[in-house]
Image 1 (tube, rainbow, N blue to C red):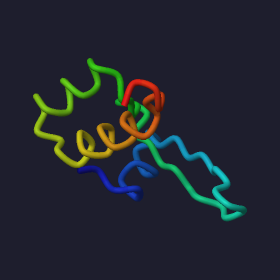
Image 2: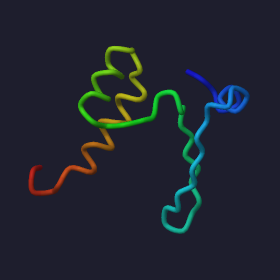
Image 3: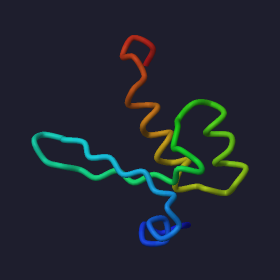
Length: 70
């Protein structure tokens, strides 16, 4: 896994700030492989052995799923 300092040194970081309940939350992303939760993203994480990203994407995808389809 690439660290935030490595990403900053290589110039491949994408930093965004979101506000959750009034608190600033920083989101760092590897610009070479943006995070996603579409089916092809999940497949790529599983094939690449990126279980951390797969877990996060599955949780995010489930939380965004419409309540009617649950």
